[in-house]
Length: 79
Image (tube, rainbow, N blue to C red; front, side, top):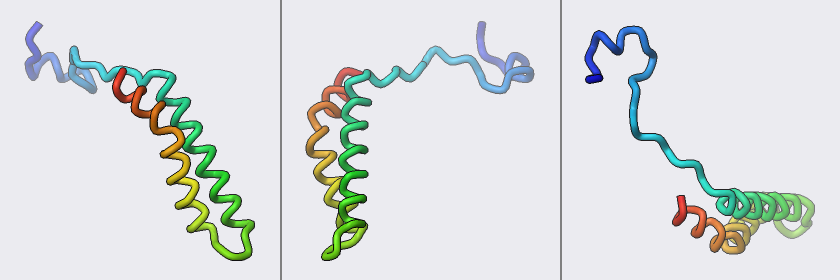
């Protein structure tokens, strides 16, 4: 059925054959690891007397992404 103006009047979104694929679980495991390490960095930076939350957050973000990079890359490659 061709998509014309009269067929789109009653629907909120036009029908499409293109559907985004779900991310595989290995990607979400990597994202969870990166998020956890980020939070550990934030907490350790907040509790430190020689540095602050910002430095802890940046270090946690860097270490989390580096630690989880293989899982994130595999997840992106197989999606």
